[in-house]
Image (tube, rainbow, N blue to C red; front, side):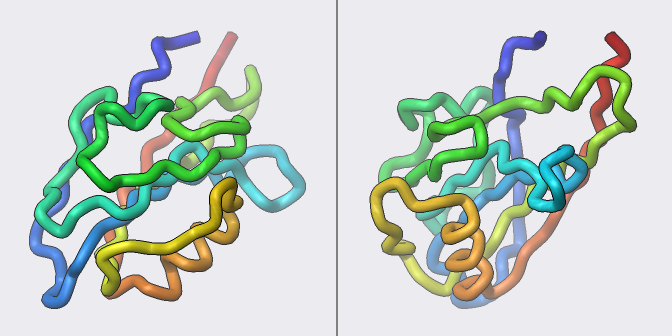
Length: 139
């Protein structure tokens, strides 16, 4: 029911050897039988990046740094998909995790799943930081 605009994010002090970043946003509380819900996946952010501006999650990728790639979310396409838990459900946790990567670029096939992207990000991460936001709808 909102404007579906990705929030501004900022990070600092990456570990030595960081060659790129990835940002993954996941709702582990989504009623999906245990897999949660992927709201945004961005890989291949340059090592010089220290954040993403408000509304960077446009589906066409036009607001992202050059070379960054968005992976299809559980909404069926790339780009930010904002929080929208079922009405009356408990507040859901939205985990925003930035990963410092040991590779400049992850090579993923076109149409790669969020699960594959998450596996590759974790396998090539030097470190990570997570911010968890809560959101619920009352009506």
